[in-house]
Length: 299
Image (cartoon, rainbow, N blue to C red; front, side):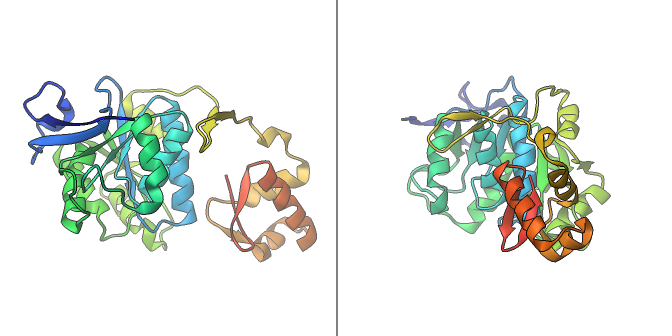
């Protein structure tokens, strides 16, 4: 079990990236490890109430970046934070969670397994002593630590007015690069990201955009392995080349935004029974899934 410790700002072990940020904490409580200062670090943040598109993008970017050796930092919250951190661990990478409460508190409760895993493959960091409960103001103030620990901040889904904007402001003040994942112009969950891009933030279309900004490259195949909840790893084999012609047809019309049966029937010109049979086959092969009743996305 990982030990808890306190590191004061003046101690050698205190993260160099944090030492000179505005509002640097006087010290931090740590459970597990601290980010390796010799490796690149990306902070991934976004909406707590994310869409299926946001979910897919968080998994997509976090897993690829982690597979390329990038450390992932986030806030352990519901939505984008937790999804990205799970994906990083599942890809065999490391992740670090910055908390707005004490190390002995688990919030949200459904992330208990993530708290356990992250202390084995990364660490938890907070400026608050044990027993400190979650308070809204603490979540806002911890954002400066999230951005302070990273080389680059990646925003995946954010409304115009959200806590993510605080993290972005902190990152810019600290001189960090900011990238955002674009979304539909009519989607309020992507309005914050689209606005950031219009104001000069980097456009994150693929993980390669982030890796290039970090001065890294990635030549491995997409997610070579995935970690299951029991801690074992399963090799993921490329499946697209093995699809039948009908499966390829349906897959081409699937998107990261959910599509309903009626729309897919119209686009593919397949019967409902043919389409359902093909969608089930794609789901079994791990390249599509039903995210709501009769609504499907590609993976």
